[in-house]
Each structure stands twice: as structure tokens, then as C-alpha cells.
Image (cartoon, rainbow, N blue to C red; front, top):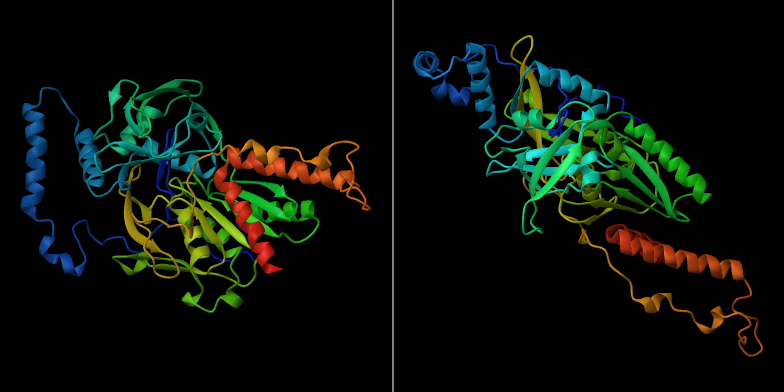
Length: 456
């Protein structure tokens, strides 16, 4: 059920990781004909000769009076960077180094600490999520942390590219991040060593016989094929069709729109949907070239298998596309906490041979027309992120557990099948351990098992 379409390389992650800028560009059919042309409704706001003269005058005054010599290139680069930064947190200027890092991103391997960042309204660096198994994750960086210092430099009102430039560095060097966290009463300081980051997009395991778990950490590369392989493996381990599947998108910052649509399409059967015009996602911008629709195709990897999708505040962009589509078509129960709410599309537009701008050009919508920007996906079932310690009574022994216990009068021992009894006890202990280590996943498994009971 592969999506047979040309890859639409639009940024829906729009995240910055130290060591790279993860943006994916396409050549849009809506480039302006001249530098000062604008859509019809903005004709009264065209750039005038006086405006150009003001800008040139400002540069001349800097050259004449500023205490240091500054090159025209630096002034122009700074002007463009400032212009982009004042539009929204995701628009930015990309110099030659940024564009080189963009190419590195496509390979799925880079050197850094592995943090997805955005800029908050008050000018602070906000962590969307650390990449799984990254140096930042191992150090203890969490979603919704605020980075206030990079080494000894305050970051307030620092542009995102500049902040990233300070965080990134060479392999095996260290960066010190000062972080504010709501649950901490004082700033936290993390010294993190930069390492090569290898993005492993899909991981899977069997939770219990018949119940599978698939985690997607990032929507990049051959995720659809990896997902298919993971589900085939889970089916083999279960020796038959799955009774339920948990799709974990927590702390997944996004990736490519095309890849996320492929994942959603893997669980949506267009021949049975009959609503929302079979849409998975669509985008709307100011110009027609920014409007895109992606539709589902016939077929479902696991038809008739109940699904739960886990999301949290670190689930952004492409993750929200998948969760929103599966929620609108009632293909899956969305569980967890509200997602990040990053529903804008960025396009990389060249402005010279060695530089470009990353510009927000559209917003994306779920099949039902819901706008995700600044709202996020609201779970069907809200489950907080905390661990629990089950009562010890749940692990106590009963009479039938003792060796040589007296059987029920005239009946065979309830422990006549010790293998089954031992398996049940191990299963209970596994569930209790899951409840302690990952309460949301535990609740997802309980939901799927409950649906299986109702089904039969």
C-alpha cells in the first residue's frame, strides 16, 4: 500500500538540533517575479524607493559612526536574519553553513547533542523534545525545558540559528546548558558531550502475546518499510493476527510530511472510509502553490486490529498529522497528554547561490478540518505522565500458591497446570512493572485488552 507519489519535501518538523538544521526544501511554484511584487491585496504596502533609501541610509550611518568596522555582508545577513526572526519562531535565514547542514540532515546522521528546539514568545529556547537515546536525553533534558544559557552566554532574544551555532560543535567536545524547568526550584546545569547521532526511526516489541508496540521516533527515511517489517515481526511473534497495537509517538518532533502521510495511510483503508474525501492531511497558504492535499489509498496493514496512539507535549508536527488523521477517522484511540501544536509548513527558498530563507508558507489541517497550530491534538483519553507503585497486596500469595496445599474437596488441584499458573504470574508481574515504569503505555495495553473483551 505504498504511496505512489513524488516526495513532497516540506518541513513539518521545523526543528533545530545542535549540529544541524532539519529543514527539507522543495522548489515551490510560487516564487515572486520581482523582489518587491506582492499579492494583490497588499499593493498598498509595496516596497517604495523611500524605504530602500532608509535601509541604505542606516547602513551608511553604521559605516560612518559605529565604533567598529562592519562589512556590508554582515550587515545584510543580520538584516535578513532579523527580518525572518520577527515573522514567527520557525522562519529564519540560512547561510551557507546552514544549507550544508541541511544536506547532512537527509542522511539521518549528524554530530550534536540531539535536541529539538523552538523559540518561545518571550525569546527563550524551548525544548520540544530530546531525540531518543541522544546525549541530551541521557543527560536528562526534558520536553518543555527552557534553555536560558549556552555555556556562559544568555540566549534571550538570540536567534534560533545563532543559538544552534553555539550549541553545535565538534565530536567529543562539551557544551554547558543552563535550563529552567517548572518542577525545579532553581536552574539546572547540564554538561553534554557532542556525539554522532544516528536516527533509528522505528522500534518495536511484543508487550504480551497478541499485543504489539511500535515506537516511531522521527519521520525520516524509509519509515513505511520499517513499519511494515516491524508489524510482520510482531505478527510472527504472536503466531497470528494482532489483537491490538500501540503506536507510540511521544517525544517525536516530526519530520517529513510525505513520510508521516505514508505512516497514517498504512492504517487507513480508503475503500472503507467514505468521508473527508479520503484526506490524510491538507495544507492552505496565501498562494495556490502552497495548497496541497494528500489522500489515503486502499488497504490497511492490520485491518480489524484495535489501535491506541500515545502522544504528549513532545509530539509535534508530523506526529500530529498521524494522530489527527487516525483520530478523525476513528481508526485509533488517542491517549496521553495534548500534543505540541506545531501546525505550520516551512519552505526553503534560495535568495542567492549560497544562502536561503526558511519561510512559513502554509498551515496544515486534519481530515476533519481541524487546525493544529498552537492547539495541538487533544487525546480521546487523557492519561498523565507519571509512574505508580502498585499495592503490595497485588503480589501476595494465596493458598493455591503453596506447595502441597490441600486441593478443593473432591477436585483436582488448581495448580495442576503449573506452567499456566507460572505464566499468569509472570504476566501479572510484567504488567505491574510496566505500570511502574510507563503508566501511559500500561493504560494503553489495558485499553486494548478491554476492547478485546468487548469485541468477544
